Length: 500
Image (cartoon, rainbow, N blue to C red; front, side, top):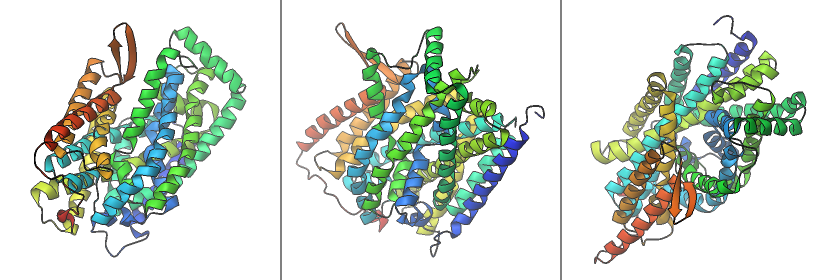
């Protein structure tokens, strides 16, 4: 370990990690309310975050540590196909501009904290509420685990072996989240995003200068893919439908995750959300630059046992130790922000839609906050145990399923904002069809995200999550139409009496 230790990098890493740790604990005093013993304050930051805080917080949610590791790794492995993450983060923002202010208003007017609260208030169905809440929790768990994988990657790149450094980082994250709630990741997101912008801009300017320019980088990557016999720097026509469906399906799923909903509900108003929908594409530019590091890995002649090592290896081989430490700190902090928000989002779901709904309907606001704090610790502990005791591939497979699963909540959460035509029973039947049918498709394709449909001699490959969503909506329409034949009134939007 000593021979591999990069001391300048480690010193810089520890400085910035220590800085955000202090900020995490001090965040409890930032915009301090009368009490943090209220889920609106602990779990949603008081619903007061303005444009810039929301921009950093949502950006921290979406552009995570694992994104910084995985997107260049995928581009390094398969080439142009790995860029699907770029269009889907662009596709989603018009949706956010139009739809999310309505969802925020519904939640604000009725004191809702979670998407499952919105669903219960709209349809009055406990089973449908439970399905949405359960999906949110199980889809979030592997997402948190992937943040810890990103953190583990840079910790090992620093020369720190074993699991103790990761456990210590987890404990720091757990304690300041418990203490400060959503205010902690919101405050830390400022530092994290500024650091990441510095790292990516420096990398995209200085690395090409050291490797002969972008022309040489693309040429080297193209030659590497041809030598390997797979991948390429351009998509083939047969890949277009799969690429487009993967991007579109991923876009629809992105803001259904509990951490994204939590960041939206923490905003100060609909105009804040709309301004963010306009500003957030700046992160997509950053993501595109980041993805190019996959090609840079080929131009630098890296030979990696694990594709996830491409970004750390680039910084270690092409930059001085202190800047490598700065970059690794940015990635590690990039894990802290989303992991904190994800655990809070899952904790909010458990508290409102399991504990309050089934265990203690009369629980006080202080009691809800206490349950949420404990749950956030347990959620992070569960993610840590996955990393420590199960193969990394297990977390990757679960995250793949998580995206498909959370996409199946889209009709229940969104359709009711615009129409009262759908019935709860129909949406529940559609959810079950998409959830279990989509899981079967992923399993059938050996945990690959794509499925090939055959129409006679014609074949088309599409994202399994989008196929499952289409089946979900079709079943929801058919079953709702059948239920509408009954002489029952369609429930109108109403205030959920549980949250008065």
